[in-house]
Length: 168
Image (cartoon, rainbow, N blue to C red; front, side, top):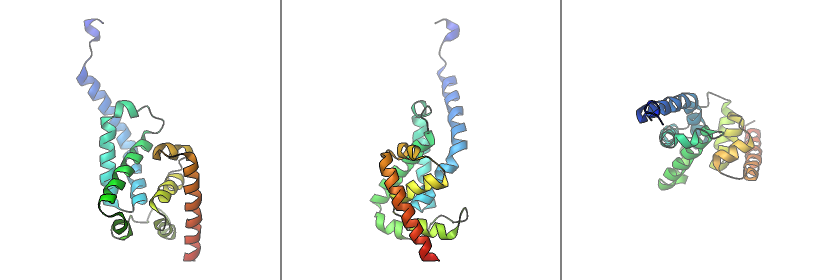
């Protein structure tokens, strides 16, 4: 290595930050919306997104080359939020209607039916139908087998249909 080729750690850090900044601008809102619908709590989704994005920045050299870095961020955010909810009494927190995400992006009846799904089913349904992710992408993002995605998706869609039928 010649003196002209010396490594400049500050330049490397700036380049990495620019790369992450582009990812953040492109994906943060979608990750937040997916978490908000899944968790049914905007404030918790905002905290989870921030925490997951901070962790993504810490590990950006590794995760930037993943097929779906946004999936990694979503999973980290969901895991963080689930742990937090568990500490706060999950049942009481998820049953409370305050802080529920507005249903304006889609049909209010569908939103009510989504609220009837458990967290695992809702996470899979939201990623599949709201964000159009494949079953393989969902499995990778949630670190579960594709078969589990299929079963949660099947049960979730059946429960959604039943919930929508009940609302008619």
